Image 1 (cartoon, rainbow, N blue to C red):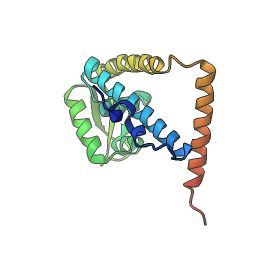
Image 2: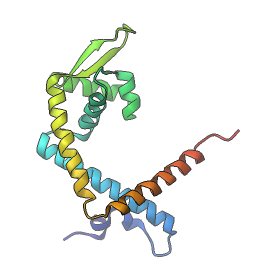
Image 3: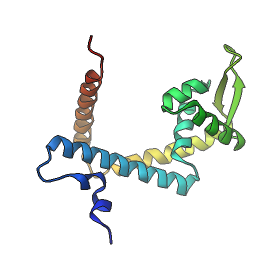
Length: 165
């Protein structure tokens, strides 16, 4: 038997008289969390890989010439220590290679190996199918409308976060 909290996730915090904006925020957060949890589970079940490793490999897949560890850290919004740990693990598994940077001998450039490229390509294909499945009940026009509306919210929040002088 599931509890209210398990059924509604973050939305369980909503009260009848709460502002609709708060309800919307919690619904967005709940949807995002549910989808992320599904992706994590499917990556573990089908590929025995974490979402962090998948995201790391996705960054490298988009940059065939590789990325510095600093760029990976910035792109993934994690510490350089986290990147070092992931790099060590993926290098031990033969999925990435670390080479000295031609521009800065103090830094490394990380690239997917051919094996890493092949493995990520398979995972990315499945990942895309999962995302399409999650939204398959929605009409294409509604998906487009939601996409545009969420873009408007992002622009507004970005504007609000700009410093005022």
